[in-house]
Amino acid sequence: MADQAAAVETELKRSFGDQIEVRYIDIFMSAEINSYPNVIAAVMAGQAPLPITCIDGQPKIAGGISVPMIKKELESLGLKPSS
Image 1 (cartoon, one colour):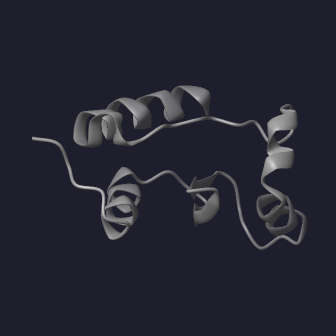
Image 2 (image 1 turned 90 degrees about the horizontal axis):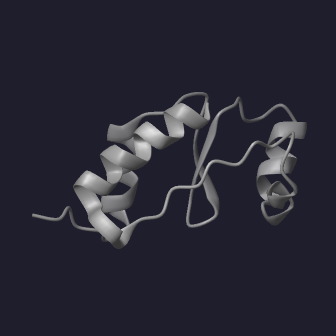
């Protein structure tokens, strides 16, 4: 999964440059997940299949990684693709 996250980062950086930051967090191995209580709650309740993509700390996409969906979410927040 970390390899997929790296590929997503490459693609998003190509489109949005330094406007974005991509981080992969293994929810079972990293204490960093404690910074996302809403993700923990959704996973524990069975409401969100993994992987979960968060944008601005909020879960937005669950069950797969879709660069087009991520780009659409970023653009809805006002980010513009770089030239």
